[in-house]
Image (cartoon, rainbow, N blue to C red; front, top):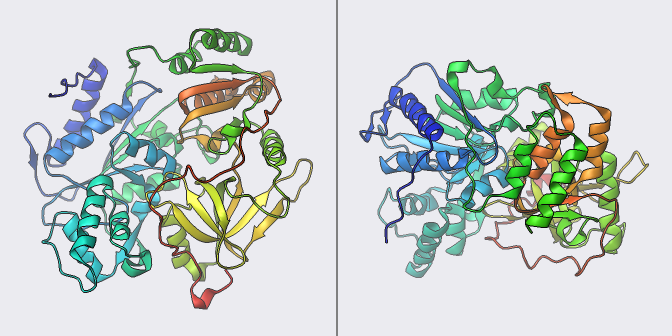
Length: 512
């Protein structure tokens, strides 16, 4: 049975036509199915904005399908085939692994900005397999690789569109086929960037250098990056280059979470009024929970969202306490947040390796256990295509009322981590979880302070971002209480193709 034809709303149709017009000027005609070779010219940037539920992701998905239908090549983050003369290309990007993962679950072949900035270098023999999997070459004959192994690789690639996952299915480790990473030098073609409200000026400039045709998808109601003085990169674009979607598209049954998020736009609603709306919604719909305490079981996979760092630290320590976690070590299953990479310039290649594999600032990680060497940890990177890695780690657990964090694990240098049972709402942007716990006492504190950002009360922006992180159920926590866990921490729920343990140190940098 054929699926019913998609019908755009009026504003979606207008936005689709505006993007089509921009692409037509660049030689890609969606209506006539014509792709002319790219030509040199001034760069084009357009921003399509809209609040949660306005149909941005649907529009993005349909534009990607339309480009694929006229033979525009999708550039992935794990392999880039040899460019065929005159072939046009598209990359769909997001600022974080989690944001890219959310798009991939909706059928959009997204990758992170880092995975486009840093590209893998493949061994020439195994590059032949990659070109075959991508459909550009005949099936190769590789010594030591059986037909059965190639069949497994083909089946895995068709399911996941991931070259490393396919080669891993054939029994190959990353050290067999990825010889290194390099910073991109050659420009690409068309770039779609989701969650562009998270971009800072430097990332925006990098993207404009790489993509002569750039479309930003963003939510103007979210929080601007901390260093942007309340401004988002699309705020600076000329008005003719911006278009906002206004109509709210809901499921057949209204979504109470989106209803609450959009109620925040009413200037007459104060914090107490809004909290009454949440309580009323919880009586009508199980997707909203007016909670009297924080559920500790949820914290292991979806952090409690808070405003104040002091609240974050208290919740993290309470989480560890109820799980009986010793101060001297982490328990398998504890959540972490990557806080950056501490490596000197002479180890630039190792930094590229870490970042390209998903260990970028803000990445959500689950601790699996110690690595083979002191200071190394086995980790599961949430949202990564090949999530399991081993890396030199510096883990910091902050303590209430103490300036210096406690460090249960520390290599001399490597990837640094904070505990991830609770995170600030700023750090949560771009992520989404089925269940989200919002710590309402923190938002009440922001409301009492009377602070504003970009002309809107700060507590409303915080509440909007926090609420829209929930895809299935919102828990609005009104009391400073923590439930007891129903089960110990575990890692059995973590799936995904194990990535090669390629982050162990080379002999010349042992001990990193």
